[in-house]
Image (cartoon, rainbow, N blue to C red):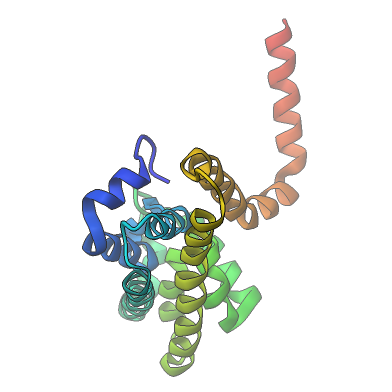
Length: 213
């Protein structure tokens, strides 16, 4: 979720076209790492329950953007190849993110294309890495379609049904979005904690000692 941006206001301003562009970019362009993903689709589904979007058209836009964005990411990775590992860190690209996506891909194989849909940052880099590793495109396309459907329909439907079943849902939208952001970050945060927990705990204890002096 972008800091200082109200997703409801953003979606009402950009409409279907803007939603397509954001989901497309977040699915396969490096700049998409900075864009909201799960929270955006959830909010769009919520707005559909309020009559601002038409649910069937919303499904079509989100799924098409997700699948086509991943396809472009794959093509980019296939053409750029290993040169990505020589790129310096920048605001939109960091080597640590590429290595995390590579490890995720190696661990889960083809299923990573599906699972990555629900993991921020990895979601953007997984199709690119599939291209870098020269994964068979037919196999990639199958996983891409399944993942795009599960993510595009599933997260959006969650927002829609929340708006349908909860009285005065506007009161709960922001807390629910925050929960979604936290949950979506857990797959990335847990491995970091397990690998670096000793250093993290030592750092936290040091900070507490200094604050108490």
